[in-house]
Amino acid sequence: NAGVTQTPKFQVLKTGQSMTLQCAQDMNHEYMSWYRQDPGMGLRLIHYSVGAGITDQGEVPNGYNVSRSTTEDFPLRLLSAAPSQTSVYFCASSSRLGSSIFGTFGSGTRLTVV
Amino acid sequence: AQTVTQSQPEMSVQEAETVTLSCTYDTSESDYYLFWYKQPPSRQMILVIRQEAYKQQNATENRFSVNFQKAAKSFSLKISDSQLGDAAMYFCAYRSNFGNEKLTFGTGTRLTIIP
Image 1: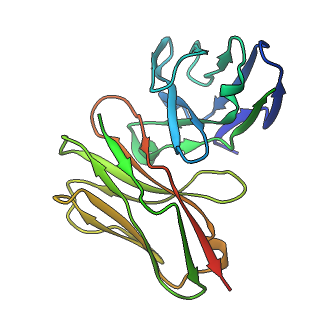
Image 2: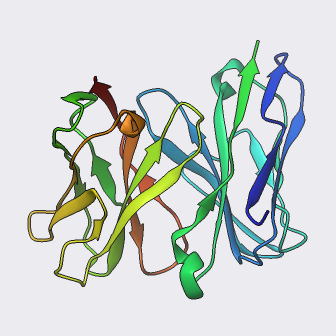
């Protein structure tokens, strides 16, 4: 099925560990982005990409890295996990063309840092 | 920078009744989109309805409609004939029609449906 695929769905990390959250889309969307959702704060933008090879910071980028080597993939890396990074993470993609301009979200990753 | 405010952390409504969720936003732009997303317990973000700022007519999708007041920067969601499946978190979001695809979200309203 076409859409945005995020893996894993759940993850528990120890403080200081690193990991990569995977995001892939098969809709040829040029825009991809990562959000985090915390209780009482809605979703906040971490990083985004407007195309392969181009990334930029969002509202809360500290502690996270991204890269966009292909149109399909946009992984989010936690360099040294901290308890403050406990959150639900969403990947989204969209396009300025056709009916995709309003975006598609993945199903989310619940990350707990202990 | 744009901001989105949802002043109702929680709302409840009797099944089959009508409920209105409030959203206000702040922007200096004239061309933008506004959205309502539904997030059920499954965590999936589902687009409910969208409004383009330059369209004066309020958007409608079946039982869902909006009251878009551009001058007042208000964008409320009305749910008619509420159903048990409407129970969820509802997020209001803003997106500029210029630049990147960044969505700015409100803090959400948790809607409970009373049978």
